[in-house]
Length: 356
Image (spheres, rainbow, N blue to C red):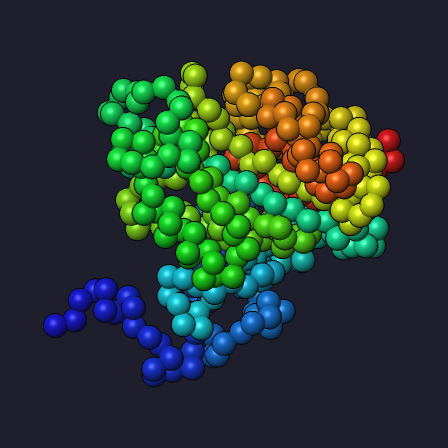
């Protein structure tokens, strides 16, 4: 007696060389991940060997109906934890048939910055901390919260264990393993300050690969929550009031910062970030003003300040970095729904390429 799960788990390589490639791209809102699959004649490990493909941009809010075709360019390959075997997930970006990047394609301009010789030589490393909230499906209220009511105040939930404190660990653990399986450089997970809220970290990864990996990890998370019948929210302030918001703290260093005398380079970089504070904030995620009130762990949206080991600052420098005179710093301003292509490339541009 065959069950659906037997068929879902069929091992294709028992009977065919063919593989399934799931092409993934970002839709019109900038946060709606889309994907569709196609059959390839055999295993592929290099994105340049994959065919370009098209999709209907009028259905994703990216093109008018009378000229709706957009083209997908494969950019990064990950192993598919859902279909397994030689099947793959493919991160793509989007172009017009004439080869112009469409307005919502943020990867294209990021790639330009990351391929600039001055940036390449600095080998920028990123560690991205992705916070998110798990919601009960039909009511959009956090997992584990009483219907329309509130749990006890924040305190016991951060990195907590136990039935009254932790909600959705099976989803989180499945995601962790699936990301490792896929080849994403996921470096850890933890329960967050608000119940039903979690974080995973991607990195350290070099240049544009950090953003490719974060998008792949978001895709996998959304697929897992789909299976579990739970909604994942990347909203920076999913519950108004005295609850922590959700951010995407971005840890960053360049070769000069990691070498002797790096602390001076870090201070200069932070000074440059301060000069362009408004510009960065505008690009750091939708609804961030609801999160950056100055009351919960990060400076007010209109204030730029940095400090050592200060979680109330815009930019935090670690004690280790101060002590060793080199290392990395953390930009605490990006919201959980930021586009990593935008944030990572903007930080590189401001700290490496821009002359104040």
